[in-house]
Image (cartoon, rainbow, N blue to C red; front, side, top):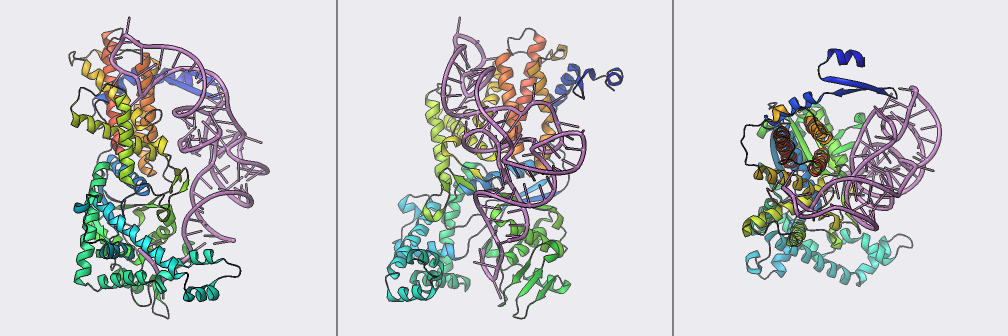
Length: 552
RNA sequence: GGUCCCGUAGCUCAGGGGAUAGAGCAUCUGACUUCUAAUCAGACGGUCGCACGUUCGAAUCGUGCCGGGAUCACCA
């Protein structure tokens, strides 16, 4: 076979047989030709439009507190999945669901009303989403105080006596009993629930307060999204969608997919799909989480006639999405086969789980500030940016800092639970975002220094050094890497690719001179190669939502 | 208990039927009068959780265990 291929195929140069493997060596001429094609092709690696629409839902925060590290993983996965889908030809619509209603925001509202004394983000110069989050924490603190006071009362003593398990300590019991206390005895709980009822009844003052608090939060979110470089095409508000889904229930009942229970609730039987029975509507006729999601899915199809939809949601909701997708399939929704739950693992800290109640949550804005600060300190030890204007320097430090943070998170396979080590996240060396940026910056620096004629003699270059060949082979593999990332909904594939390309370039750069190459042919060829590598580095990092500075 | 995800070097992670299992960090050694050293080269580091099976061939596929996590509401 080897001999035949060498004789018949021009690109096959020679072969060898090792341990039962037939290796065909492809000629340098083939790779050089290939590079020339790549170099002259704008948007190399991307696929042409496939005429299909895909919606990507990500972030989807609650409006009672600022974004945190968990949201950052979600946002980065969502954004880069959207960019990847765009690269393989989809028309992409980015959306988020704003969970702007419910008991949580009422807690913030109530605390602000009771303890705020009319303070505003402006009067306190606190970032508005943090301002609202502060009152959420305030609520929890006052509630905890109220609860611990209550535990000293005779009422509490009798509750403990009647409801505690055998040999359960008072401490353990009251820890477990907290939610019941909130709903049954708590004064603050009562007030918060009254507020929710008033909101649902459309009470003017309550709605006005609600709108005020939410607008503060949105202003804060905008700042954070902006600094992360992400944006959305459409926002769905839960306050608009939480009553949706009734039509879907009607449809399901009419088609026999759903059935009524004796108490008036509606159910679906998914045991044939290895799932369980699931309530779709309460006995009082009101909606559930799943009802809402059914309605929202349908609404999105009405809005955009999408072919596919990706939900970027943490893996704790795997079961919910299995159920949701199965129900949509049974209902015969036209997009039902294009649904995907991009399920990702939780982010842990080296000290353990993040828990908002215990105050171990890493705030998104703090994180961005810290990583940029790390870059600033690092930059002070160099003098590469000193000749730049303040504004440009700041922009670059922000780009480098965010590259470190984003790459650190997105390089990990989504399904894996990950440990976020704050020290490692600000690393600027090794397998990091800045390392990849640095390869790009080196290329830009060379290209800037090259003031020769554009007409090049690269065509006379005929024999590749190993690093050149390796770079071209990586470029060759790039389109497949993108397709794989899209098929598997896995941005980490792109992150790994970009690192390989940067690493190989750094090695090439170190071993071989470009502008002082042995011949004009080699010089021009390497300039062309460098440009092609820079283009692919930039476009792959763009798919991860990471910007490339021209200098650093 | 049922279902799903994860387990690879001290740590963080790639690789998901094919050759001698790879990176980074950490530790140690070298390389800047030379296109930016946020770089490069080298050393050290492995029972791919365990067992059985499928296969010419298993980190990779199957089954069963072990360990970690999630989930099984008329909450969201």
